Image (cartoon, rainbow, N blue to C red; front, side, top):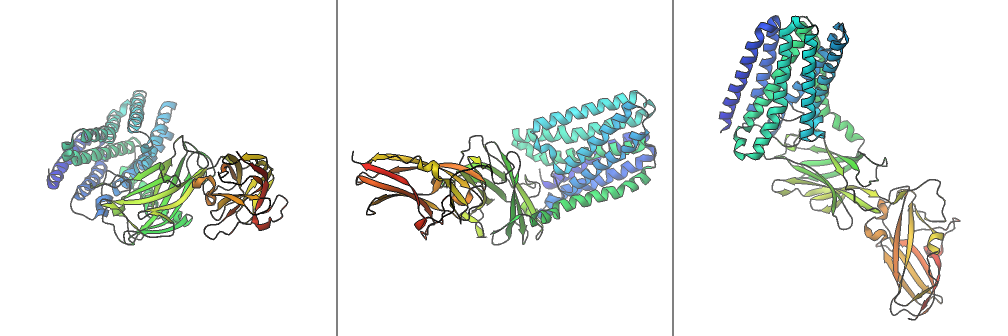
Length: 561
């Protein structure tokens, strides 16, 4: 079916639905019927704008006029209408003279107030489709049952209006739940159904809007007020709500980005710019940099464009292990080739110069390893491959990937009251317990054998750089020495990524060479920077500087096998 054919069919179905609703309600609404006609007329305009977007329009209009996604013109109008329904019901709470109708209108106002937020912010998407459909259907049935009960207990004189109220509920529910879920299921099962899927969206959205309008005019009629005058009084609230929604999309992200960590990176020949990010906790530890098994954290990123983009990009965030860069958590904001992207605000519709926020909720598995840090890696994907990073102030892991930040899973957090025999590396804000390590030095070791030294490393504050650890065995006459050099935690948890006020244990294995000369040896350790080989400044527990920035650990004897 062509776009023109869908346009004509969609209009025909919408006009038929409108004619039936207007014809049935005219005798019941009487003087309020003209208000209903005006609302239906506005909805027919929105439906036609929605179908107009099927044609060869700019990507921004194809998104903004689409009724099937959030944050758009249709979502703003529908959200405002649902909010006005909830507000319009408030006087009926005071007008009720018994507990049942008063309770009914309280529930009614709260439910439509919630639906107003849900319409725009898609709160139901936090639930699985089956859960949200079942929950909303149950609430709808209970509200309908309460409506019948209130009518039966003292509103029989308004039988027509309560019938319209129930019809509005039913029409709204058919559009919002039955047709939406049914068409998605059919489209997944039968690919040919996609030919009429776009028309089914028109039917779904129009039923939802006309059902809400029917509920609104019925509530106003039940208040026994002049509908036109009442709507004019509610109009400023509607306009204020629309302004708030516009601010949410196009103004608020700029304010949020002011407090974010700046991260300048450009993609796509400078058209797409990452300007900042922030890591927010979802569940788990309150410490921003600490992640634990099963935790969820949200990475908010802030973007700008210098020109309209040609397509809907896919944005991906991974938490990667080090140094092997294996993904332990991932979230994709996926673009689409269809008229509608599977994101609320697809990149091809971004307004140049306005800040856009993209959020990545990362859920870590229950079996992530402790004493490791994980890089938060970002990439952008186009239809024909990844977008290459043109410029970045962040660590670039690959031509198309940058590491924004890191999170870590230390062994435990440091209690401020913890006392230990601290050897402190003063410029790097790290320390280890000298007594603990000295106890592990063996008195004797055989040529070719190994011994382990376990260090409890304390991150007193943020470390400014990565360092390499050395362990030296030096003969008593100073003529012979053997060494082990390694990055702590085998590069899985670099020093510069140690979480301040945390501690983790690392084991170093020292294997005595097979050609080692037997004799007495002193054991030393320390840290140095690569590639300068400059040793890190270090002091003993009394605050005295070690000679040659080398920490003596003890002595041992190497014996022949």
